[in-house]
Image 1: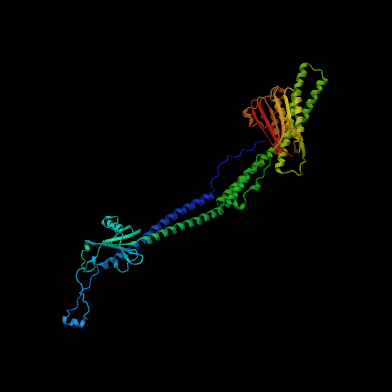
Image 2: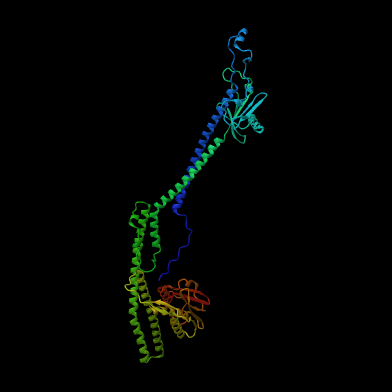
Length: 543
């Protein structure tokens, strides 16, 4: 009987393919959205800044026009003084109309019509400075000294940018906010002569708060939209990938079920584990995998069927040969015994005939063991193939009674050993279809301890109930089992050192029979061996 395959090593499970695909797609979409949002933000920011500069340009031009506006001249013909009485009353005050060059410092730049709230004007002439700010009520007030110094420093050579029209722009922190500032020398329209215009600098500034807020709002909107888009894309991709991979999961489930089939024993039918036909059409990747898996299942099923047929033939041959050998072996033993009793033999003849009897007994034991294993294998194959036509007859067996009988027989066969047995007062019962198999299990284990240990060895046997199981231990203080044999001591025809006497040689089947009996009853058998201590432990489920 082949040993069960060892469990595969535990490997940390990787993230599912659906999750990895979703993460990859979401990451790619996130990169695209970030790039798009950054591009949109930059372009929109430039548009907003351009509009702010255009507004400031209008404010500067309006203020410049107001300061350099030409004063009207009087072109009417001279009036005769005698006619003054007819034109004016005695109480009227006549103010002559001024004429001549325009002096911008004579006007207050904050009186420029249409200045927006928050506008700052700073006018620097040859000998004087005029400055102020339009407050939230639409009236003007003086500019803070610190703000005036900041503007003065910027005009003197701060960081600035000049556009194509020659106007200089910069950004300054004024009046507790960020301002866009424009400054340039006054421009005189037409033929108007402006006094000191080459040395007079007009500075206008409007708050950039609204523009900055617009860009901030745009950034928030883009970030929120991108986050919502990523969530929608993530859930959408996850749903779609999961839906698309359901067929692959079904194919994987078939492979997992096939891997759990106990193929090492009995007749196995794998055709019922095949992938459904709709998932095994080689039209896409899933169909290719399903088709290949079905071919593999068919191939393995065919190989298992051939193996089962070959094993059945071999099992039947062993059973038939063992059964047929029993009769001639019994005849050999019978005739040899008759010769000892009826024929006059020399001493040497009696010794030779005694050897014949001994070897025939050993061969009979081997034949009986082979026949027993053949029957056990047949019963196991029948159980796996579910061919039983009627329920087996089971009965409760007290292991304590069987153990006492087995130890008594072992003591009679090996009086040079020291035998100990411990059995609980309460019965330790299990269910069994064939109690004789349990007796053979105990007999084989005790015989193994007797044959492979020297005289005077202590062999202790103990039976107890533990956690719903009957636990039987057989321990000896002999030389132990060689380390290279411990893992395969239950395999068939595996033999350790020779027995103490040539007449008690080992067939290599006793422990294999013990394991077959234990497993047939739903239990297990293990061994733990070291020099000076060998312990066989049998565990069987209680009734």
